[in-house]
Image (cartoon, rainbow, N blue to C red; front, side, top):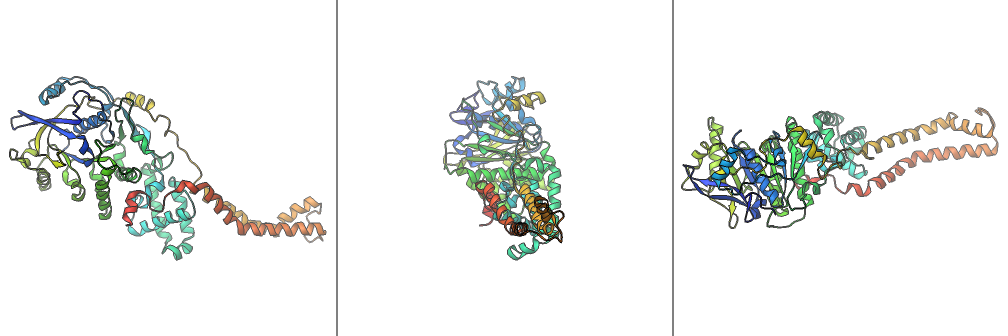
Length: 528
């Protein structure tokens, strides 16, 4: 744990200074590290200072040895990787909040990008994503989602690895071709429904899904790194282009959350979290999400704190987060909201009601009066009880405010701790290749008897035994035996080829699958 420039004070993250209506300082506001895994919410209209607050919190967690994963929508957060500059307005704010000494610094950062352009590629396999999240990603209806579940079940039972989109496409073709057989076992499998799923798969591929699904898949340990001096690495996901595919963005974040929940051990309450997530544009996680999915997200958010993970939602409007989830968010920072329309006025009232009242503050009124860099703050304290809401000047970050240049970003990508590990795609043998091989060998097995009858093998043995074209000729006893043995082998091949391929598939897949049809905690919870 490194206490840099007053960012950390007595094991607490310094958030800012509370002030009265005349901006006279009243005291300091802190986020207790032991409550960092109790989650949080940062809200406010565009341009009110949410990104700077997010950066200040990320700096504090990093100094405390806590890894951070944050989506960077506008690219502004990338500046945390560069040393800040002592500009006049920052020095003035540092003085106002009592941040002394104010020492500029930079933080360890790993850049990630689902498209592999502004950071190291992030990939997941189709199997890891599972049918529930894939169905949401492709906007499937219940019938289509049912077919997708059948596809995953078939893959499991036949030992077929689903790694990338071409594997899933090959399985869909296989299911369509064998619909009559599969219907008797799993229920109706209509080819038209399979075709609809295939079309949605093409849409997903055109949005960049082909870059996300595959190997090498992300290892969670790589986003939970600390440096030699004990700082937590800040992982920044480039999300500016990703926002053009909001469903892919939301599904990826939900997948990552579920993978952490499924993988990490129970640790109870720690003196500080292992990992903290900042989900920017959080409303995208819940837009058009079915009620069942929201319930499971709420369940994961509630339970994942015992695994040492904190989740902080960042959004413009507090009502963007469903009440079931918002009720789990203990640490809150509310920047200014506009209140012109009825919906905006409702949001202001809703935000005010979530805070523990302060008799000296008219919360709903102050929310509309806050300046840039000001916020209403309430953090957990004592035995986990929210503190009274305070009007707070947010402390200035010690790293750069604003984005890195393209050259600076590329240099940090080149020298990062995971450089070279994820840059090249690996395409190992999986469902696509095995189904192709199976189709080819089955076709050959079906064709071989006909060729033997037509003289294909007879011609081969005729040439071996010197009998010419041989059709209609009297064979010697030796040639007759050779012909009969050949036909027997061909017929056996047709019957045994499926069993042989099944053994080959089981041998190559074996220990690699390791998961049942519904992967990920979101899928498994849905079945309970």
